[in-house]
Length: 239
Image (cartoon, rainbow, N blue to C red):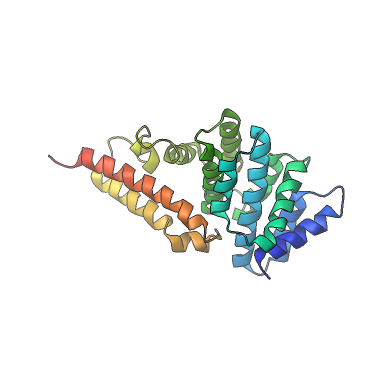
């Protein structure tokens, strides 16, 4: 049974109750897969991305074709199982619970009080990918993403690095992208660069539960990190 079938089961279960919503789907993920951490991570990531992207679309007011295509780049769902994704997406849009309630539940998947959780950063990165698909990050989307980051306990400096990665690389601050201070030595910059590259290796991402399709999206993250390092290196390299 695929994760989409399981998600469909959860949605069918909560849809039977008028008082239920996506929060119950998240709770089901936490309890049903308690003994299978790998499957739990994969299903949790998928539920989080679908539910929060639905809430972001509602905050923005419109869903463009570009955003739909961006979503499909993250998830390659068999045609026979797309109905399960649509049911969860529509349930999230119709749910009276605010996105903050979802985000708090999902933040709990990484452990209480943990800051800069890699899996939650992956979710935020995916939301950025969808939000900017139409060529602009709208004000409501920006406010939504910043609030998600706060609830996910992603530190402000780290959030600014993520935001910079999604900006035009010609305008983005390379030091901000790498999360290093101006005046850092080339050795310090190299250490930070290597740490970021290692943390974003495809094997690490898969271990965190992101779908295979997301690896293609993550290459843009690596491209931004590489470009930032090369820019700094050129400036610090001895003449």
